[in-house]
Length: 399
Image (cartoon, rainbow, N blue to C red; front, side, top):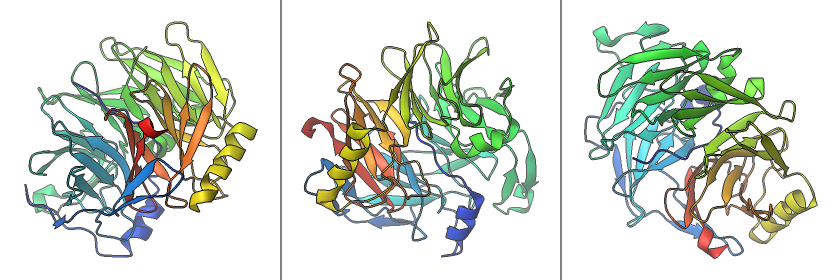
């Protein structure tokens, strides 16, 4: 069973959700197996000078649906999270068609996704204090309420509103075939076993201000029998052994680097995007040694600006990395998109671990904010574009 190669920070700001929801009525709940709408082939845009192709916009109930994470199912369809519109879309790369599905609870803020061994898609509902299972055959959805921190539960009244303070943001299938997820509101990591229905909660040693993790908390399969996750507010990355429940924490060498992207490579090392440190880092979990690679410099900053000029694409010029993953060519790819006062980013970057060379490509859409990356398809990197409500594909064979 493969697991999700995520590694992206997503802004779960309540103000952003409320502002977006004011633009249009909240989406209604979808009957099992019934998509909200079917759409024809999506227009593709490829600008001269970039190997990136964009598809969409992704259909949404509001103008900016919040496209972020993308995940392939076992049949090759690409599922697209829209956290502002509380919808999940299914994209067929062969036909270019979308089908859109709304979550049972309006304004549920669906979080990071992963597949279970049966092929179903799972994600947290950040404001809904629950996990959501999506049947990838028909789009049918089932909610699983978290057993902690329930603040409002109106299910007995048949009203699809429920809230809580768990603030689960991201989820990953562990080596034990259980679902592990962040619980920023409880300073913990949660576990749910789909086979038995058992829940457990594991407080993270020393964690404070876990609500920051609720905005940027990322979890994914780790080396060996672990899951790995970021602790940006503590300037750390941590692993949790799924058998012994032992935590191991790694402090980043650069103070206040704000690690917001984590990913385990094929050799068992952990790669990290340090957003405010403007570096990427490699952690050797065997020795605990951390090697950092600065991105700010003539080769990184100037090259990224110049590469965007021929296609008229602009965004945050500072190399502030987020999601990170090792692709099929053995190189490390990451989004350069962390929001800053100077604007939203619009680049995908490649780092060669052997030569230590970095190359960046701008998206055809300006200030697009690549919000997540997926490397499951050989020869390509797929990602969501938050501000333009599109999905993108970087052809790594053409780079």
